[in-house]
Length: 253
Image 1 (cartoon, rainbow, N blue to C red):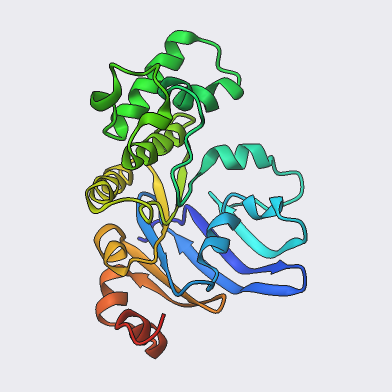
Image 2: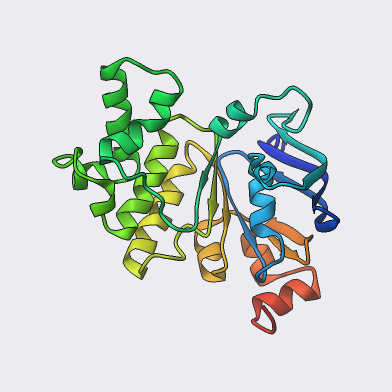
């Protein structure tokens, strides 16, 4: 018996003004798996990713048609709480974006704005979130120093810890290692493999080797259309579509 989808799109279309950028996207994201979205620049990967937490709405003139189901509830239905959706579906950006605050205050930020006042609870959550990202041992003696003093890789893991602190269900990652060196990239990839035990992860990556290393499922997008979707090892070794094969073999993109 197959698992029910954690996230599912049904005939999803996305427009910037009159320009249609996503065309009839139908995809099922399974729980506790890593799903990679690959494709050439401008194919709609990041736009699709931002549809999952309604972040595209911050851009004037955007319009979505179709459905995105989170636990079988359409997040675009009238009356849905957008703040709650974004709490459940966290986003890690391409470049680390720690706040100009202490390490502690970065991780505690989401808890405080969501109304948590219990200092003990906040401190325990900060420690757990940093431990879950492998940062606790590295920063526990300098929690009150600026997050901006951390290395790039540490900053990105801090941003992941900040997202984990508010207990999301789905984590979106938009090329999370593109600004990092190979050693920091390795740590983030290791972290992704650990986090899928608790979370459903969708990662946009331009690095096909990375998609092959970290993901269970892969979707290939081209010109705003989902050309192929399936288990990563099958998409990479036995693609069904010639376009997918050409992209993966480096013939374009």
